[in-house]
Image 1 (cartoon, rainbow, N blue to C red):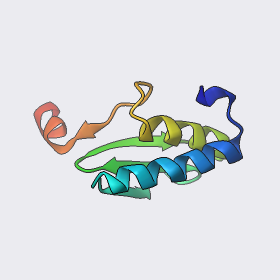
Image 2: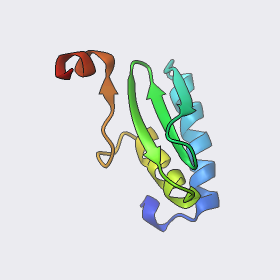
Image 3: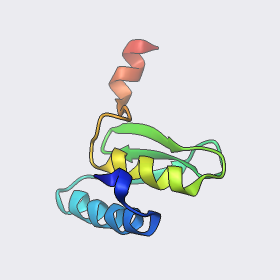
Image 4: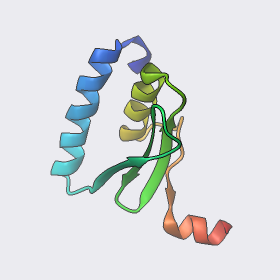
Length: 85
């Protein structure tokens, strides 16, 4: 369970998961979001937002969830945004 991993353990797990996804042919992009410890995470044509303020531990936990496809975060595709727009 990721809630029991320390922040350094989460960071190792994040890198390992990014390697797995890249080896599966996924395109992974990290971009600026709202500053501080927040990111926009894109995998192929879907994206989500992780982290906030200056809480690195929270960013690491949310990024770990996002990369594993767990339901705490929603990935939105460009087509979904256009349909909702």
